[in-house]
Length: 249
Image 1: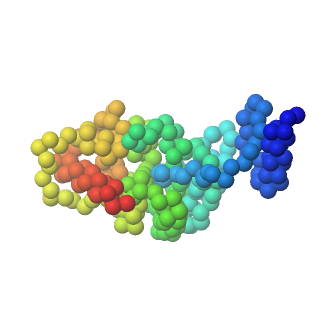
Image 2: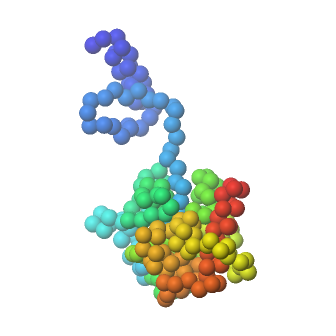
């Protein structure tokens, strides 16, 4: 063994005693630890409801290897927060999804499940705990305000969670997600609904599904795949809000 290889092996052995074993390639390599790295950082938070009637059912589902579904956190109706997956790891909560140009939200987001069957209001204790968790996550990762989303936003053809009972306005008041109250602004003559939805982040390959997801989030009603004038003004207001936040953050 030549001197260079011996030196590399010695360095590797020294570091082996003070760090956990790294994920390694399956071909022969020499491990030489560098301090020039940091952890992958999530850029989105995706909020879900479990669809379960009890926390026990939710935990069984989210930890069952056969189901192949998970989230980083689960918030109970009583406000107790369970962590299921290390934040540095990729949980399986988003599935086939897209927001803007990101088509792998599982890799770029943290997933939070709320113990709720989808047919009931969210408890105050649960939302209070969620806000505390979001505040901690946003502070540590500096996640943009507009990147707190619902599962239905990133998968509009497949998902409708969190349900219409979810208090998006309350969250936006704390800096988690966009919101606009009714806006009297006039639309520019060049305003295009599909382009505005896409600029907001929605996948518009199915424009009707994107419109329904938008209305579900901001109006709690997805009964129509058309936007009326007030809803188009709301979309424009949200788009301007996002643009202003991006300049400020």
